[in-house]
Image (cartoon, rainbow, N blue to C red; front, top):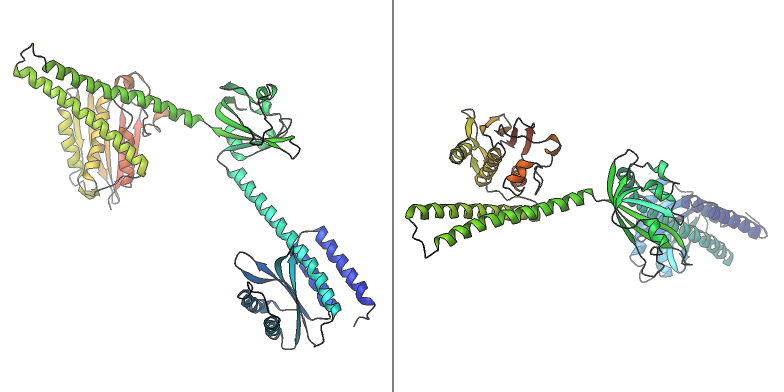
Length: 523
């Protein structure tokens, strides 16, 4: 056993070693191991543990131990959990001593005394430092002083490690946000030199991170066309950045030239970052691909123009015929009246159909689904009735049905599937203005039924075949501009087929017609 004069020297050496460990590294386990070794040595104990308090689940958990078998740790954790029940009201000395005796017996019946010291930092409880002796003696003031010194060091280590872990976790979180954000991020220093970019930025601009970092922003963001002044011009004009408490941003939108020679449509929001001395430290640029937004705006504009035209035309025709029939200075014979009423009825049906399509598209967009009323449906019979109706509307086209005799029924919504067939036949007629054969048929397998509509019309460019099912989209071309439609028909067709757990596709070649075909599960 150490002589009394050795205690201050050993204590000083241990404290110095622990202090060095704390300042040299932030490995909590290593610091706690050294605290325990010193505590056990200075108090002549056999076993030592450090239990830390978890705010997440309100428990004490053994984080470090010495002189103890690993299989004893769960039992100690269970004993420590019993302390949580009285933590809010505080520990009584009797209660704490009783629990310490139970812990000593659970570890080894030869352990007859335990000394515990709380780990606190800035009056915040962090855990407990406990040593166990195999002999019983009075707890001296020196023992308390020694343990308190080591407990204070352990508390500092725990606090530092928790701060480091919180900072490291926040860094990892921000790193993940930066790397996996859908928007591009570019970080510039005060001299507009690129310090960092994320993956989305690489994808949008074509610049690899390793190539972009260290370059001037102007070398990477090379505007071919822009709607506002760029970053350097705004800085030169004194318009950005503005050193105000509320902060300021600069938005620039336009087209840039990528390293591969292609153009990219981008919108960039620049936000300045100042230090405590109000000095510009860096500029954070949020980069967004606006190509799809522009296409959507163009489609919306085209849709509004088209719908306006489509609505005005039947309304004008209806009004014209109604005004003509209402003239009092003319006597109309019944043939003229019947013909005029038929036109009014036809245009009213066209107007109602347009409104129904608009309402259906809006409902699908809002609910992101199509409601089905299921029953047994024979697609070949629906097709036969549709062909009979449409054959009366055109003299230029020949209709052919191509179904096997045993074509099976499926479970589906008969009204909506009829709408699908009608839309496909309408398109086949509209986009084969010179006539030809329109074939409607189907095949089947053990798991699915297939249905197709084939025409001999103008066809669809390959570059546009993926977009024709988009809402409001219409194929460019002279024929499309002269043909009635809103760009909602095929959008509704795909929505209905998808709701039936099916798939729809198109095969087409310019000048050689198109084939629309879909498959639906038989179950």
